[in-house]
Image 1 (cartoon, rainbow, N blue to C red):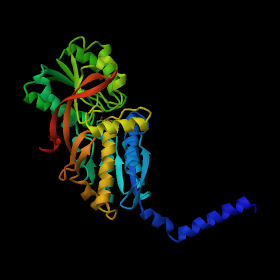
Image 2 (tube, helix red, strand yellow; image 1 turned 90 degrees about the vertical axis):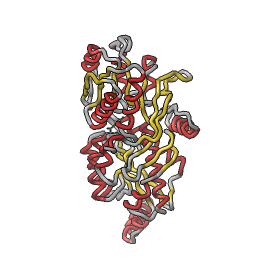
Image 3 (cartoon, helix red, strand yellow; image 1 turned 120 degrees about the vertical axis):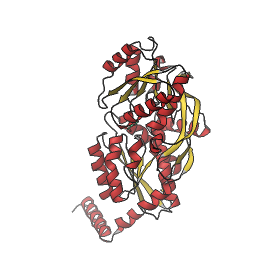
Image 4 (cartoon, rainbow, N blue to C red; image 1 turned 135 degrees about the horizontal axis):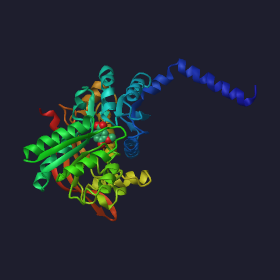
Length: 393
Ligand code: VNL
């Protein structure tokens, strides 16, 4: 045997002795594993990229040891297909023995994982998906993103007061879109406005052109839009190409359409678009300025969007739960320590409602403006401490 080969051989022998002595099991006890399932490729890839970057930033800023445990982040790409999400969640729980499941770019992925969280008593921290009913799918779900009813209602109060009474809604045809459509319409009608047509576009590979043509013909005061993060730029482009703004139709929506990930590339045609949402990269707090600066520095100038903030705050909720339970508790103890957390986020103050496990937060009205040559969602009004309206019925 050559010297090299002998060294290699004895390393293997050593490793198997350690295995027999149960050393890896001991090492595992000191590790706290977070299984982060995200769409890293495919239609929702920007959401995955934003959340992973934010989770890594949180760890870089807060260290990777909490209550004596070494935090290990295991990132998995579900390509935004719920069957894949479910399989990955199962593997993470059974094989990797993760302490927490996190991420979930779209509603179907969060829903597909809920039974696994329940059966294995693993907290599931939803950092992106925003259909109201998600938190009811498992008592182990905690949400740090937002809900569409929460974001939509504020705009339905603002619109009729600002001369927008006849409105067409255009939403992505799945959970969050149907929530946005329903809650926007109910509140608008209550306020004396009217939804003259409710249009739904397919969630996968949408073609907005025929829908926008229809809106042009209907000539409403405004078009209310919900599309998931990443699809906003396409809507904006086609809206402007059809000259709908020049025809006197105002574009409004939840902040998903003027997503900070894409907004700056949408061009001056986006100026003046009014949206309601829980986060803007231009939110004028000291904490947010620090967050945006650090995020851009760590990611080649990429601007954080609302997905990034959901990921960053989700990590906060997990870290704090681990600290509170002193690294001793299982899933139930962690979950209990997640409920009721109240803290300052880059978005403003936020709160995890202990009853609903959903996020309570301020919702802002914002207008696209130019600041230092860049397009931003500039906040001009705020509704404080908004609970998910989908839960109170
Ligand atoms: C969802 C909601 C996804 C809002 C989004 O972007 C979004 C969802 C990916 O619940 O599926 O902006």
